[in-house]
Image (cartoon, rainbow, N blue to C red; front, side, top):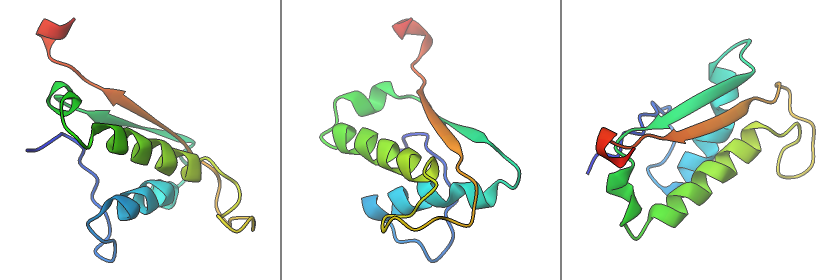
Length: 96
């Protein structure tokens, strides 16, 4: 099932939840001069009933938290600016 999240991660990232957190946390390096980004999750209604939906939301939050931080997980200053990440869950018209 395609959920609509289209992140073109570098080839060295794994294909698991932790890798997605890392990729989201590193996106600020991919958008020079940016102060924020918005990720749109299309057809979000298809995710609501899945077992992994709560984990998916947690992963988005963890990635955004890392991107918006000025320090790494060890508390050392990062050599990049923080970037605000926001995610929008888009639902079909009939849900409005």
